Length: 113
Image 1 (tube, rainbow, N blue to C red):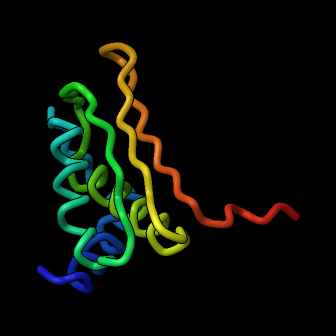
Image 2: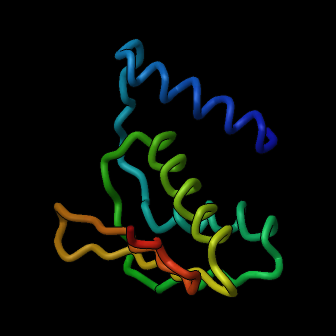
């Protein structure tokens, strides 16, 4: 599936979710593996920029894989678009009930008004 197909699927799925005509499909997945897969998929689209990843211990969470993948993709692509040279991704799990995915870049940041 190419980028346009994925984008179309994402928009349709989000629209269905917004109008409550679809339900979430929760299952346990390895979050680190999903993040690594998304990096491998997106990195070739930005060969002039680096994606740096921490080596977190394996962590599984019960999520809707499609929506989690969509969220990771959108945040990662946004960070790559606005960064100068590199994006950092850290998956942090302090305990078995909390997960934090921190994405940062060396771009100009959000302009405060």
